[in-house]
View: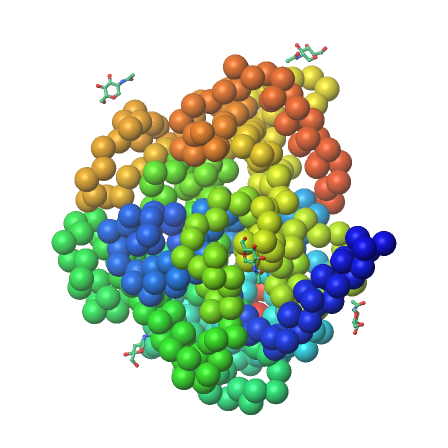
Length: 499
Ligand SMILES: *[C@@H]1O[C@H](CO)[C@@H](O)[C@H](O)[C@H]1NC(C)=O
Ligand SMILES: *[C@@H]1O[C@H](CO)[C@@H](O)[C@H](O)[C@H]1NC(C)=O
Ligand SMILES: *[C@@H]1O[C@H](CO)[C@@H](O)[C@H](O)[C@H]1NC(C)=O
Ligand SMILES: *[C@@H]1O[C@H](CO)[C@@H](O)[C@H](O)[C@H]1NC(C)=O
Ligand SMILES: *[C@@H]1O[C@H](CO)[C@@H](O)[C@H](O)[C@H]1NC(C)=O
Ligand SMILES: *[C@@H]1O[C@H](CO)[C@@H](O)[C@H](O)[C@H]1NC(C)=O
Ligand SMILES: CC(=O)N[C@H]1CO[C@H](CO)[C@@H](O)[C@@H]1O
């Protein structure tokens, strides 16, 4: 009896406290191809004073995972669902592909709008555009300013793909022929304008998906000047791009403060995947990089900052296992919204974990199962998951990788004084074609230096069985052929909907 009573009282207390605080503003900043090593607090030679300060005042997520490439991470962020459940298992959405994040389930923006938020997106979409109903303004965003594909020019907005070239910039549905300004500045100004025009009637959700720091390697020269000692040209320009992004975040947080919104804002900062070594990024000391299933591809930079975080959490590091799908239920919860109408989520509400009230309930992450990736070797075991298929799974401290995991080297930042601890791996980008199962204890060996697959065959078998289970829940992979009707020439010189 008294137990029941206590439970009821504590229920009302919690609800009361949360209701007392107006729904927080949510600022989600996603960097593109931002490497694990490339933030100051991971020992980088690149200066990121703003990001460092925010992270050191907030909560650094050091056991936080994203997907190895662009569309997959964005699709999981906005749907809360693994790629095996959206049909986007393979690769990205290329500009000419009639593909998109399926319309069968609401996006994070849909749910926040439903919870009473004013929702805005600025920057890179990359979740499909062949029909108007796949565009951000049809997926829960009240306003959108940005580009729909990827890899365009930072100043001219030109994007060439296959034999097609076009511009890619839009204000809501309107194509914008606006060139000259560096996209990091342009997008920052757009976010600041949203703030300036904000009338205070609803809480704000802003999803800022920077073009930075993805290739092409471009930045105004003032930003590379502090890095003129870096001899490697790609790294030098990349460092400048990171600095511009850091300054952008400073300007945006200042605008939030000026408007008096900061004290009730939660900022989430995340990369979309590991750094691209070939384009200046770096993930040292992690193994592998963008595209790969090694930690360098998926172990992401991420932190949360908010004045209303629990005081016991501020300035600390979380080693709780978290995944990019978790933001969906976490932020909907924080917004006081509901998850009704969603298909089963793979994300877990992590608000109490972030706020220091419990340890992460997440024990597993399906990094991916890609049925279309080129097979590698022969199945290593019968009657379980086919190890020639590219896949990876984390379960507790353990991680299994099968198939072709992608580039496998440890690459220290150019010009930096780090000794290789795997000198020979550094020249062997790809592994042999016959081996196709690796097992690591990530807690003890975050660098994936010691493959335990031969030592623990029963653990391997157990994890392969688990992959088989996940595979049994997968929807067919959707990776359509290029459609010539996408040609920007047919659409006024712009990439955009063609159906
Ligand atoms: C940040 O604001 C300063 C001062 O207004 C401006 O000079 C700079 O270009 C801005 N940077 C970005 C990235 O928007
Ligand atoms: C979820 O619930 C809200 C509030 O009751 C309602 O407005 C909305 O239509 C529902 N959404 C879905 C997708 O069922
Ligand atoms: C803050 O965190 C502490 C320690 O984890 C916890 O005991 C407390 O309940 C939290 N306070 C609030 C208001 O959530
Ligand atoms: C799997 O079964 C096939 C057919 O029975 C057999 O030839 C092969 O050696 C088995 N492979 C393994 C790894 O046990
Ligand atoms: C792996 O590295 C090689 C050599 O640098 C590069 O050509 C290739 O594109 C990389 N592959 C992937 C999947 O990143
Ligand atoms: C954009 O404007 C420039 C200058 O007016 C023009 O040359 C170019 O063709 C325009 N591009 C598109 C795609 O409309
Ligand atoms: C074990 C092994 O292959 N070691 C080689 C690694 O690379 C260095 C430098 O090329 C060689 O000297 C080692 O023999």
